[in-house]
Length: 448
Picture 1 (cartoon, one colour):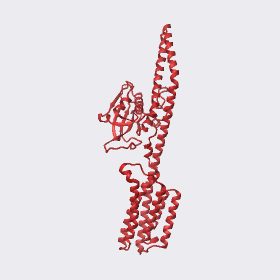
Picture 2: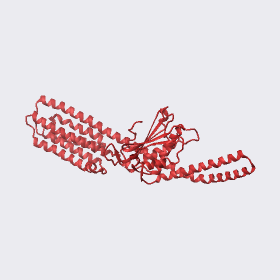
Picture 3: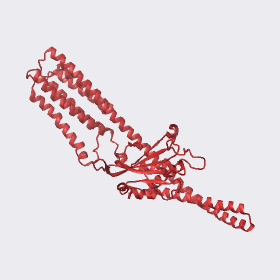
Picture 4: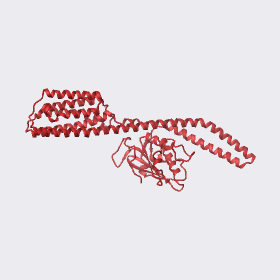
């Protein structure tokens, strides 16, 4: 199974994050500009050229409406794929903002307006949103715009006391804009980088899964012939020893045949598991998935199913053989950890846009240092010869490949609970949901 393209496509592009936050900032700017003009008109007894100022503000308003409709309109209505955003488009929008600011200052006293240093806000944003070349171009445009104001502007008679109050308000507005939006933008970009890191880790696990499957198929093919030879030789040896009357040796020869048969069964399962790497996606109910997962389960300790009938009928779209084998591996691990008289409990619950399968054993649990490493390939707490430490690693890789998540909760002396979330189109406790990307990397539910 390869990494789903939808998982990678769901991670927003850096420029997409930037245009989203720039549009939000521009709405705040437009509202602030309109409020400042109205308050200034009141404080200056109607001395402001309102028609000109509102026309300049309207330029910013119309341009931001165009941005909202072009980039976000189709996506919000139909969950369409986001339009590509180029860095030059962001830079052009910021150039327009500098032009709007220059126009507003032109009609309100030019360089003598205390809000003139709002140019610094645009320059601060440019250092985060665009590369150095565009940032320097915006710096140059701000420098030119302020230079124009030195030469040409419409003087505005502002009393000194109100000019100082205006400078104080302008400092607070500029500081608030820079602090709030830069922190939000850098936070959104950091979140995007974390999602990219998670996606790359998932892709690496899928590559390792494919490599292990190839190795398993090769081992199954290469070992089948010598094991067949050993089985045939053991059978002939058993017949010869039966004629000579050596019961202990006959029992040893029979044991060799039994163990060879077990090895061949394991190899067959490995070969089948290799085939699940390319298995197609089909519809399967949760009940059918659990039925398949429990095929071949040991009689002791038993497995108790706690599945509400309405959830058992919920359909999932996934590769059923691969996922059922992953669940079978988790159930087998729980049986290995539990005493023979303590049943393993497999429960199913609806959780948001997913169903959650919880596999709880009655073992001794794991200390924190072991829990931190559990799931690493070739790391196991079982005795030598009882396991290779690949079951949980492969199970996690398969579940994450179909858009699910796996989480382990354990503490020493309290047993272990493995929670598996599988995506579904049905939303529990909310509206219908179609996305498989909504399942968080960590499970939100708590132990029962």
